[in-house]
Image (tube, rainbow, N blue to C red; front, side):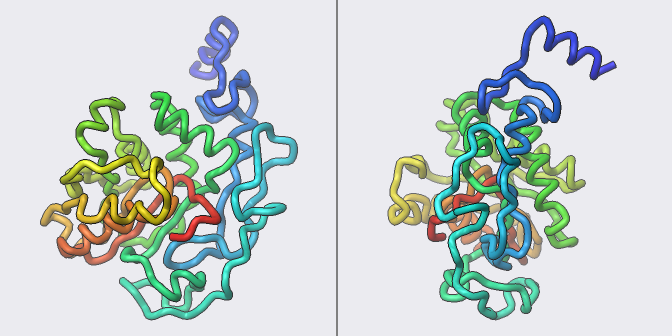
Length: 277
């Protein structure tokens, strides 16, 4: 019945993909069209055990998919060559034998592990822009499904809760929603995990990270977050839309660690390659 109703609505009111503007059709993951869904450059193991940087092949987009462009540091489906995997001290119960990228071996992040579903380029970049800046809330569905499909099986089995990265109250009122909270709600249903948005709060306003160069982002969000006492002894996973320099994730992890979190993961829909974390 639902499929028949969608077909009738598409005939009367043709639905357009918010990422590329094409009509939706076969292979669609509403509201993304089939071409954009297939064209997402997915991240799969082997990855750095700490930050999730892909260390091998990045799954290439479907041949001929519209709007796909190479990500920074990606050529012919491969990421920029990482330094050879290096052993690092065991952290937070993470597998001591998991590979490490060069930057994490030199300076591990304050969280225990990071995962991302796809590369921040092409259709995924356009979909995230529409979701975050153009009010297309319905994109939370396919974006969360992508994260669940690519990363769900790679999360440790003892995760106790998902915690969305909070927006400043003024920015959330202006936008009308927190994109990380919408993603976390969908992910929680898909993965069977509770979502705890009140376990982490933004306690001071910050400039939008996208407006700042990489070097200024850590200072911008330093001490901008506070975690609730309820996180003490818990294994939690931060949820956000994009992992770029990792500055926001690091500041959130610092707050969670200060409140006594036992283990901290980071789960993002997209990862920007060619950007130092």
